[in-house]
Length: 303
Image (cartoon, rainbow, N blue to C red; front, top):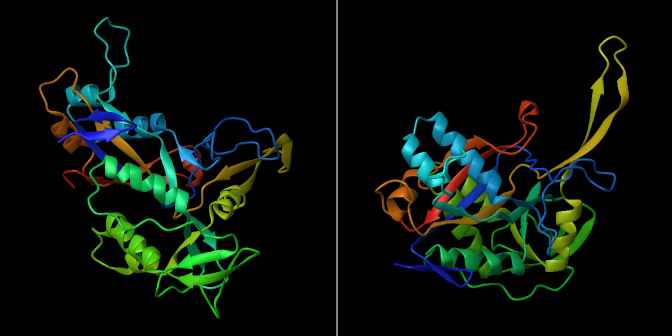
């Protein structure tokens, strides 16, 4: 069965999901504002992303460490030599785009924020990956409104409070359906329903402009310093600020395969080898200070 990606037909495609278990820093180099080390962002929306190249490198390293067949690894992720018979990887991996951004809430501790535009683009990707029946998409949300699930823990007396933002709340079956659908994908394998219940009670849909603001102001900014060993003081010029996505952030992308290079395997077999079982890996920088520990999950055809 063929699926369509950006107007082109591909034989096999699946969704991949990244759930940050600790703050996640996939950097874009030096910043131009007070943030010295900002995270990667999409050019058009300025929303956080994880480049497909970063994801590809992490998956390849994980496959090598677990002892996967080197020929299959080369077929999936390409060759890194200068030989004439080099080829690109058979797996095409898009950037992972933000789906759920955790934001601090006065009630319920924190919320998983999303927006109509986020869900619209996600639904398009999920249809690409043969995602089956999807919940209906929400209508545009007015500024100052927060659409919650039916049994949420965020709203009190019809109001929701994120950081210093104040919203009028409205419960919605659509928000509830999306929370159930995403909870099944992200936590369906969990024996305990507790994580699905956490999402079910905390998903909120805000306006696109509000989501823009949260993506700008809702990330973590940490001050880092380097201490001089002899003086035990900050080394000259060794104070910097780095940005991270907060723990519990969820991003998603599409991985597909048109043809397989170098080995006699079908596209579905190659995807089944590398894009089926959940994996826990370190992604991005600052690993030695606990950043970037994530769960990678897969959904769509064959899952």
